[in-house]
Image (tube, rainbow, N blue to C red; front, side, top):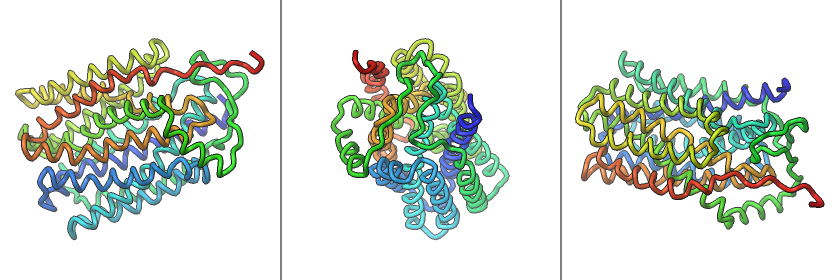
Length: 410
């Protein structure tokens, strides 16, 4: 590994980790914000909808943004913007719902473009390395979520206010992200010519230079590609599975299992830890067995975990269910991102489309679970997650690697 690629690899890890810290820091304090604002489950779902709406707004433009400004500048600027949004939420929740909704919308907007840009850079580094590493980048995100959740649990346990916790986190995110992305490699950097990967998704090729008009035309045409759309729906199913855990485990543990806020946050941290383990050790399974069999098995594992969590008679069973739920949900999103970026010439536009479809889960998920939660409890409303996991099983073939391009003249 060259020094340049090694530095870029570490920088991509940093971007993913800090994105995870941001997501979990907010999620770990959702129960306290809910109580301060006096929200019902459906009301909370609508507030969380603002974050997803911001993400979708951003993702629809992310391919153009990354294509115009590059992944490094996009991640840096969006990291700072997200920090500003989180800082405003840390004070705004004391003044009512509107400041939280506005802050979450900006948070989501920054997160959407940041997500696409770091996945594009991750795909470039993956091709340069000549081996599957994208799930480990997403494991970095999960490491960040675990760290954010554990800090959040500690803050709840010792009585640190939401304002102090989130304000400090916001400043750290902005500073660390803006400084780390300097090591990103250029977006048009091709992989080292000596790499001969065994996985055909990692075949080296330098993407052609395209004009702004061609970029727009390619972005529009990408929305008509059947494989890209199917990969997007596949990612949506796993994003819904992951997002439901992030948004609702703490709340459902408190409301349905009668745990304390600290114990509810620990269940959330366990879910995230299981996702981290799956993403860290997943590349070896993907290299050995391939994308399709691995994601199918993990979808089944997540279904088993959901069954335990929803039907479990006691808190320990719910914790076991959360563990399996998180483990099974671990690889769907990163595998979908790798599948979208199989062809480097179209990586930015396809990742943007797939992420846009996937993030619809975060748009529709919170109000759906919240609405159902008002009628059947949040815990029982999680049956909706199982339905989408079954959909992911039927669409798993969509993430099969693209065939290796044939040499010219053959």
